[in-house]
Amino acid sequence: MKILTFLSSLLPSFNKSRLREDLSTTREELKNATLPAFKSAMSYGADKRKWASDEVKAFQQAFDQRVKTKHRGNAIKVTSEILTILDKNLPSIEKMVDEYYADDVTRDAMTFFGANLIQFLEMMSFMTRYSRRMLYWVITAEAAKFDADYVGDTHLSPGEVAWLLKNRDTFFHACNMMALEERAMQKAFSQIPDIVATKDNVEMVASNVGFARTDPFEMNFVASWVNPIYYVRLAIAEWQVSRYKAAQEERKAVELRLLQLKAIDEGKRPANLAQQLEYHSGRLKKLEADIAEMEDQYNA
Image (cartoon, rainbow, N blue to C red; front, side, top):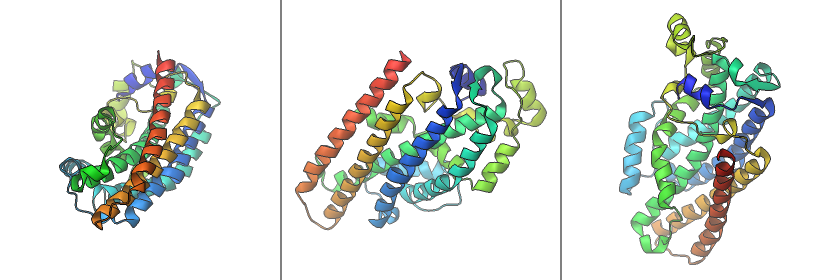
């Protein structure tokens, strides 16, 4: 989002620990849920699959048009490789946060560099979450294409599918951002001016140093905030625990759907998979509802 819109939406002030906790949540979800889910998908050959589902075909076509990186392959393969880069870049981002911010982060004293760094953290968190949901949706849609009766309830509500489609372009942008290797990412950050951003100087600074230096990751084109912890006085610890539990349940649901797709490919129909999916999807829906309630409560 535009930097002034971003700054006006931020909490007036918050502790540096909020940034660290955001990084911690992203790291734990990435290492223990998102990357393992993609590893399972790759082991089942999802990275080599030619999609049959019309919805997934359309997503893949848009992905190919919008995600411009050196990585090649379908959306599962490319996303998996980008997530691996994100994982490698986490320590570098953590070091920047520790070295740059004081204990208190104040909106009115936010610099161009500081704003870019917080938005980068947001996009890392979003990428980790969206990738996992996208993977579940793709595998489920593929399985349903071949045997909708066996797949049964996809456990994807119309709202969840709408969320994926609504945030699709933000995800594509996140892929392009997170595909940067560490050196290129650090170079982009090093060129951002460490000047306090105000309504009176944003245009002038951008004109003087070049817009690409004030917004090297093109956050200006991201429509809206994707992580509530910088915008509402959320009870972070409780929210964090629920997010992590939901990520684990989502990983399990992905793995079960992969087993289901593999069974369909092999002409088998194990009955126990439906029961397991019902159990884990039910737990996931409860956790997601709790998270939404927390966010709504603190955003009221």
